[in-house]
Length: 321
Image (cartoon, rainbow, N blue to C red; front, top):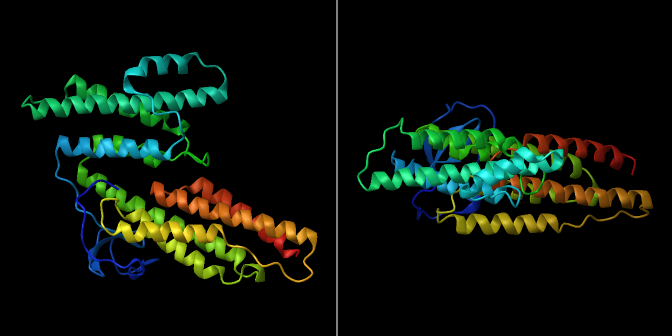
């Protein structure tokens, strides 16, 4: 989510309830819940933050923040400085190995993003000195071309886990550049709602897979607690003072879930022991996927589908135990 002034509202992590499914609320409805303001989209109440004032300086602030966030969540080694754009493009053009060319494409995308940010910074600095820059200025057009090409190459950029590309996150700086700040905020509220729905889907899949097994007794409440913490984390800005309650619960509950030890049943065969060990790793992988989705604040549909298929296969294996 974008940068905004911190709030000092008192908050209890367990006090917010998410509305799932269709209801009487219309998308865009705002209301206070437990003293905090929320906005409704796609069956979810999402923390509402007032958009920044529309200006080039505000856009620069957002673009800088979102560019850093994009590099934080993507694979290492692609944060190529803007002044190395020509070298990155030359390497990409010359590369013939398909696997290496994908990485060169990601490095070129990083250089394009940084060049666009450099150009936009220069434009804002000129305006701050009283130099008016028209919207058809060559610097602005060059900035737009860099953002657009970076977005096109974004399909080659992977999440740092290697799971899948996160095109929505990679495209956010370009969205700020091309739309109003208010429209960008609305798109983020919608994306956070979709992220929360993705987390709910994964939590349901995990519970369906594990919670009817005696080896995983009382796991359901821990999964629910972690999913709730993940949804709070994905909707809360780091500048919000409530993060000091939300982030520790998100991390601590995730650690509990990763450390969960199934209880082997009496006379458990060796094959069943292998299956339970496989199940334990699958549980950790599900925790990891929810973690990545919550922190990136965008859905991961391909990874979620692949994980669901893994769970279906695991259920069939566990049924034989």
